[in-house]
Image 1 (cartoon, protein in one colour):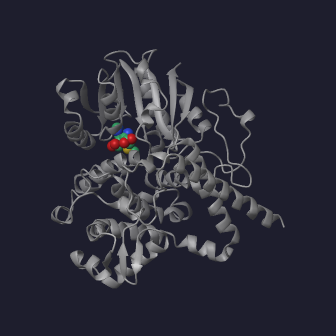
Image 2 (cartoon, helix red, strand yellow):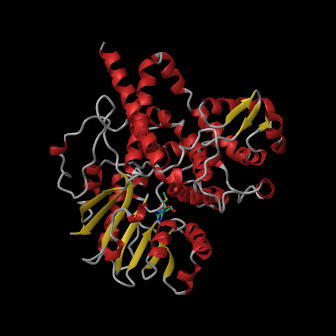
Image 3 (cartoon, rainbow, N blue to C red):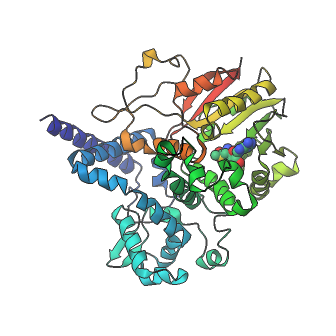
Length: 468
Ligand SMILES: C[S@@+](CC[C@H](N)C(=O)[O-])C[C@H]1O[C@@H](n2cnc3c(N)ncnc32)[C@H](O)[C@@H]1O
């Protein structure tokens, strides 16, 4: 009986969420995008997903639908299917490498046969059909008639936005100028996937060696390996993939927290481990009176110069942006920073390494310097005792949890957080942290966490700290 009442409650969460979405989309006079149509980021309906009412309804709906499906499914089948889920990621890697989303974009809504899809790469058409059928069964691509496939909403996000002739003539540079989602998918399915399958080996047989090192038979740390000359294609893909992470977030996310208006004219933002620099470039476009120092390892700095030249050359010609090769484990050379900005840095490192990076910044900080960290803050899958938390006094720290009987963290609707966490571990020995986890790093490194902003429509949060 308990289970039936739970099912009914989950069904009514789904029904209420659909009502909310119907009302909001109708009042804005835009239809909900169809799963069968390619994704169009310019469609005003896509912007509606960021509305808090809609994003909450979506989260409830996803969590309740997943919970209903797991509740009623044969549990043995659920466990076995989950153990084979890695095939999905390998299939996505094939699809991106063979430019199948682009072939199907050019084929249009009628789609293309597996033979036509396989022809440019001389792949086996039967195998292509089986790969696409597995994905279509998971709502990635459509099998419009037996053996004929077309793009749908999800598969079209892999489109690198270039013609097939351009892609075929230069496979190596296929991601440059793309939205970054294909690069993010390939990076995750390729290096993440290969490393991930070594997780158990690394724990059971290899004394905790990072799975990436086992998979790639290397002694090097991930970033050292990535920046070796023979891996330059992986480094380029990684740089574009980082930009792809921003594509999955609201475009104004960086302005949803720390108040950049507070910075003085000519104030310097140091983008520590800034990659190509897309985040500080977004800030500088809105606040051109702010200076930027891009810091990263040498190969990333070269990519960053190119990215800024293409996207904001004025800031370069006005000498408002400086490119500096800098290892963040060595003393920080910029002593007058208004902000040290770290996006997706701390999660790459173990606690001791992360504290070392933060300490280098603290030594170089002025009393007015602010540390702005953009990272995911991981909630527990259980109910939390907020009153007992050491972080309860921090402004903005509170985050609501899902209503019963949903899991408090919305379960699979927030799976990205936990997938990222293990991705960090298998590649780098890194970790996505709880809020208390951040507190425990910042305090010994001489920083006091004063504000947290949970950005709407995203799982990324901003943490602001001051020197103590
Ligand atoms: C996950 S990426 C984040 C890039 C960028 N902040 C973003 O959000 O797009 C991590 C960055 O740290 C850089 N990195 C790794 N080790 C470093 C080191 N020792 N010193 C400086 N940068 C480093 C990498 O090259 C990479 O660009």
